[in-house]
Image (cartoon, rainbow, N blue to C red; front, side, top):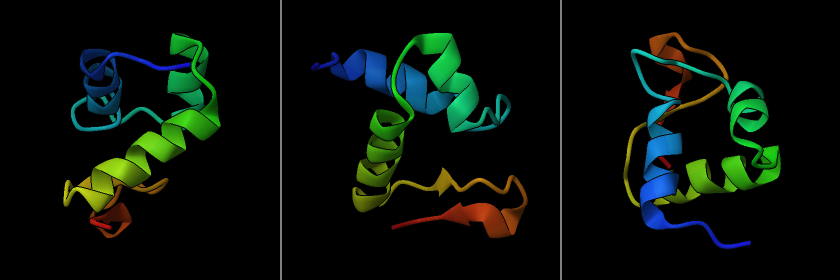
Length: 64
């Protein structure tokens, strides 16, 4: 299934402060598989965007 870019961006923003939601939480809310969300996060990192890892401390933030 293909999702519009706007939807992907809105979902990715839920991973960022102030929301700091986990992928499992977002998956349940949005009805999108965890695997898809992990792929979206990985792609965002590959673009050079700073995305959180499972840890919400500064050490849990990764860029690619």
